[in-house]
Image (cartoon, rainbow, N blue to C red; front, side, top):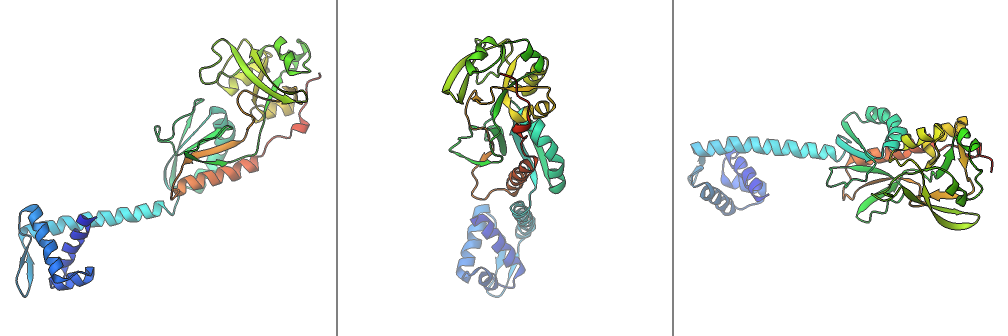
Length: 317
């Protein structure tokens, strides 16, 4: 900053009739101005200004310094203006990360309207089934499902709970024993989602909370997949019973292609918190592009809403 201040002072000296006039513009005495110029000349080892008691004139080196300093200061001032605009208007590259199903089901339908509303934003959307470190991967916002406890990050809930449910095709249920309690799943082919390298033996741990209290069961089946669409398609084909967020299969439930099983029991492989959250770094001054996207999603997801469970067909017990 001191170098820039000295550079601005030198430009003012070149534009002024005297060192005193330049000093007054910066609140400096003539002696202080002379010391600044002497220090600048000592730094480069060359005289920049020929000074007399009445006037001053730039040397050839001084004129070169003036030309370059003027260009540098103009670029810095232009950059400051652009940065100020970034703090006022949503603009620039916005890197968003989320799981594949959330990206396909929720984000994709909303993105055209967002980009039309904020044309100066370029959106980079990354879809993976693994959590990603925001700083390491240059991610501005991560959209996560449940269990969003991150003490070092800012977190905002975007939607109310959309629970995970068990479901199967009518054909599968017709060919297998009825389901009245979680323990009955031990006689069924359960289609599971591997988590964090666990379940390498083909088993999953599902938690239940319902009329009979809370319990945890070791579940097994012939298919593990870390993709909601794969598990959904397998269920539609009559392969077994998956556990997924309700929004992944709401249309199939409403159409009767799939039936919910054990509706009286809450079920989860991880946590009973099923909300969708936006997670991002804490900012003293939040970039407008981040605020704009999070606000837009919160409004857009509320408008989309969740399916009405009372209208879904349920498997007979």
